[in-house]
Length: 362
Image (cartoon, rainbow, N blue to C red; front, side, top):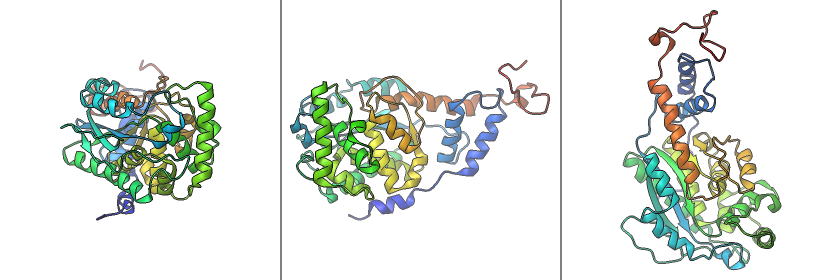
């Protein structure tokens, strides 16, 4: 390969603190009590730090849906058969999935990437970056080789770079892969030491018996492969998924290009955790859209130190929660671009010379 993941990681810099401070000061000059727009103000300051602009806008936004299959499905850990993965890819490409509907509402482009689907897929709208035809069964050995994990990460980085060249400056992480909550739970347990009893959830809606089986499979995969917790690429290779590694690349690529990346749910969170272990400053470019019903997600967000914006009891994946958060991104940007200042509106500030501190402006 002409470049390494660490080359990209080295490009990831911390936020622009000058822009963040300027944005915070500007927010306090607007016609409202300081801090009264809550998380929208926090988001506006973060976007300024990411982009270096006090009044950023993101007319070009893309949802990267990474798709791949998982060999561990042969252990019966999902309520749906593995054939659903390629079937859903066709659904994305025809515009019929939930993420397509919500992306149309949010004015976002859906980029569907085949990084490891266990089927021959051909479509003019498909981005083909297939590394291999699904992972091996991680309960019996490594899911893939280290070289394959690296190739999947680099595929995600390249998809972002190509999109940035077309004017897309804001990204949402999406995925499709039957069995990927199992791999995500294994990644999370490997990187954090949190028990599989807490990281494993019901995924597609499995019953209690399958849930117990799923916990055992994750434990067996960790025992069999002994992934190195200090090496995120080793963890992705041994107990991860091609689409999860691809999303790790999407996050790293967005951070290296100073673009915000909106995380969806549990699988995106596992990819984000791997990205942070590879490039710690990438955390500054991540925005947590929501907290899903998958039980491990709340622990993942705590591990990342990210506060979700939405609580909608969602657990679909695809990038659906992340797309909904684009509306909040737009709201924060429009507050900065369109709201009047006390001076421009001729509104009196507080009696001590500061802005009003109460809920009313009277």
